[in-house]
Length: 385
Length: 163
Image (cartoon, rainbow over the protein chains, first blue to last red):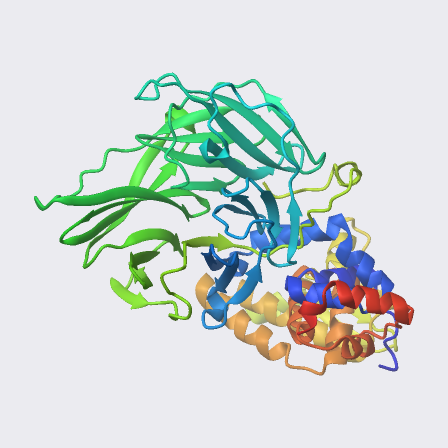
């Protein structure tokens, strides 16, 4: 390199912006200036912004979690045979995690056993435990097994938030009088606060279907969806469409919904299980709150056996999971080819696997140790919502 | 339109490289260099432009790239065929020595050719993705300014990323 000694920093930054997280963590060792580029907030968010804009970088993430050992296995589309293994450090010997996210490559985990709450970036392997809320729970609150959580990004204040709903229990069998105490944790202040807001839902279908997408957190609440806007901190409801399943006059074994992503927006997979097999339909949603219109994209049926849809990707592929004692399997349905393929290798797919999550995932450098100053420095920096 | 009238109407620019070689380019090619397009729009473009940061070897490549892109985009081919054609061309165009790549990237930055800058950055990124720290330092001509203790500490924090 006789005639090429000096490389401008803008060029270095632009090359680094196109590298995966693992390589960037390694390249912090190249020299001090590379290290400070890679750890700067502006770089972290430009890197994320670029990944979000480039749909080729979005990968299917399948996460399996084993409660007895708190082991997580992450399969990403380009390495389905060799999952990355993680162990979440926890104080309890047995874990029952509620998994929220991903949002900007981050997950929020709530351990039902000891109420530990943490944020996790699998790409950088950073974990941050969230301090306990200082507020006394409502009078008739049964305990955190009765709490609902949501996690997401507030693009207005550029902050990550966890929302906690504590149900004040009444003996009314139909839960018509349920009221909620709502608390919000924000990462930038590392603290909790209470908000005075009406929750227009009486009972949520706990831990079943929930998702974060584009600044809003969604929970399934029976005939409607409860949503929480991470920026204005208000709840709203969205009515679900009425689905006419072909019943086949066979006894129904179960039904439910699963949230997923379709063209960058929230979509819902409705499913019905009976002795014939599984019928499912993917519906997309346009508009907000009361002005929502639903469109059915396609249906899959009947699949032989009882398969629960756990997510979709590339708009036309749905992953289904089946749990039979000691025989947990995942299959992929490709709507374009109208075919079913076995997708995941059966490594460790044994009966002890407690949860499988399929989501569209973009790895990020986002740090959970953001200091107080980070927001003000990048106030004017364009951030993805 | 006959080809002779077309020729006389075409505006031509002379670009002079760092080492004094002069290249004649048509306006459709020259405007792909954002720095020159700005000069033209501001009516400040003289027919003779000196480019002090680019050698003749690199400038020849840059002109080849801009020429191909200008021709493909103005041709009567459909957008999808043009896209495919450019993809094939870009892939072959990037098949050069890595020092040339670095210089092309730097020239694209200096001449402000967005598509070439993006292309070279992307190619360089995939080239260095799996390289060792020592190889990267050598390629980018950067000196290790960490002390032994400092480097050890940075390495220790993300030891798993080196596996």
